[in-house]
Length: 174
Image 1 (tube, helix red, strand yellow):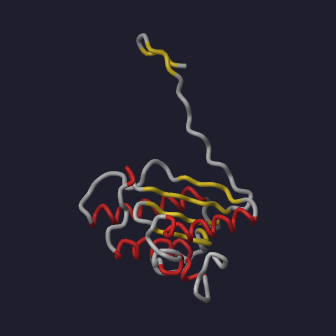
Image 2 (tube, rainbow, N blue to C red):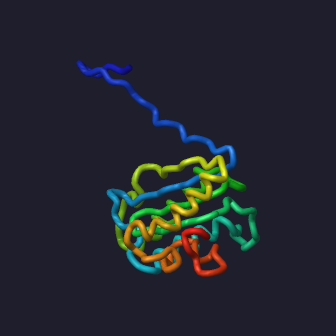
Image 3 (cartoon, one colour):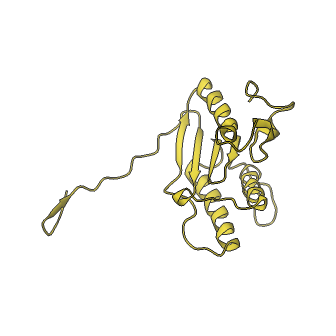
């Protein structure tokens, strides 16, 4: 407890991130004030490339490095992102920090803006069992339908569903 003049208040530390026993997490990053974080197709493509570079990183001279992480699923919505991610060479926080800052730098430069693009720190939920994993996989891929952005999960272009399903995707497969 701290005293300042006649006021007394408690300082509360933020809650520690729950650690996954499998190294797998459902990560959500939302735009500040729920603002759009993607304005044009080029923006979606940019973050897809950033995600790809997390799995296939190279050093300054082009030498292949170990994957920083792996993605089981992703969905890029207009104002937020869902990732189903597994840690690899790096822990979760540095990977998400790298993704968020790289994309925010690109976005802020492109749209001539300053400040934070993403609201608060990213949210993450540990995935410790197979049932929850498949529930999240479906949830992430069905998110555009729930938001009214697509009629089926296989016609939303900014989701990993199209790259994961070998035949036309439906709710039972994804």
